[in-house]
Length: 222
Image 1 (cartoon, rainbow, N blue to C red):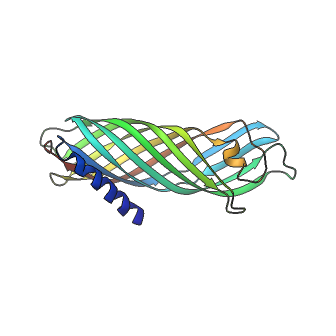
Image 2: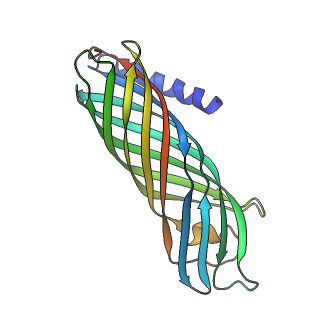
Image 3: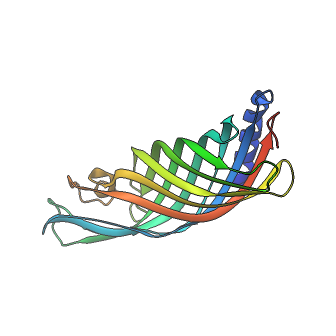
């Protein structure tokens, strides 16, 4: 909750610089992200398989409406979770290892959204594409080792804003975020204590169902 309050304060401060804009929107996102399996099999001595566990995902966005039906949004999304993983790599004697890694994934995304709303209507449907990066931090609670990686990310989202007042709406949304070739190599196995890494990788796919709030400012308010 403290993180959400801080995020709201930051976005609100940013929005004050755009009060003369035709339509600025602040979007608050919360939702449940589902489990995602990760695995890679290079050979009998180099493999891993595990799960990025589902859980709570939150974030916020600042959206500028270029046109009444099209907006550009900068979005920050975060998840703190666990990644239980079995793995084996060359250079380690003693069989496969297991670690229940601590993992946080931070998405910084820029994207466009198409809005579909009848003049004077309360329901504002939207869909959009996002591109950006994911900053993932992983640590092994068994030995205290940690690592981080920054990777290209993309996403899709769609949903609706239900405007309960002229300026405040309830948001319903489905979202897919993907991080290309995020898990593998020294990112995992350097933190596991094996001293070696794989050259193969697994891409993250995270599907989220949730909602949030939308706040509308500026001369473009309907």
